[in-house]
Image (cartoon, rainbow, N blue to C red; front, side):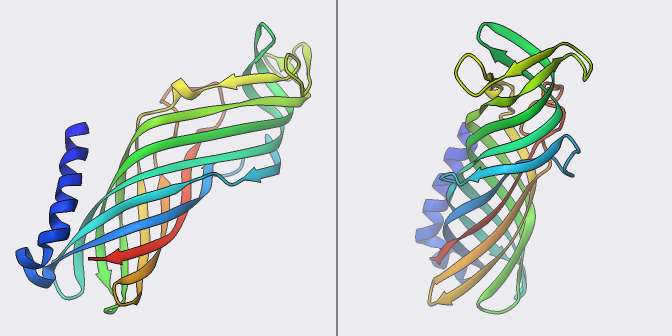
Length: 249
């Protein structure tokens, strides 16, 4: 994977210099800088998640570029490379939510009712492969798939202001406060997957000469945790929209 990333960086840098000489107008390079807005979420909100108390924006920046090869005046195929962060910080109200926590020196698992604060942070290299459709000289639509290699991962938080029923909803009741030693901490960072895949669709709009903007939707098909991870009852998927600035070389 490291060799692939290095090769793609070299390809992007070489193409930015030689694109016109190699293939005239059939090969183009676009550089990007954007911001992700979204989060990791189950598909279909379960009844155990009652409401969202707070959502905090994270520094979800994206840097990268694409190389497109024109196959016809309207169609092309594009390969890109991104270095990006996908994260969120959310506080939610839950009821009978299955989770494992650490309270003081005790490891407890069961059904929690109360508030849960979670911070997710993932830095990754992403390789999208997309079909491109040129609506006009200024507008390009893109759709395809992506693969990501996560180089830094964090999934941690705490349960607070509620109670935990050990085992099932009728089990022994443990009160959970909001201070250190009273709340229920958790850290599932090491249970996150390194390799992720998903769908991407987007639009580029060149506004002034070689400058423009873009919008993307990235929908993860693989959960952020490894297969077999059952400590949290739902599988969580990374779902993010992106807005940014594009420059065409």
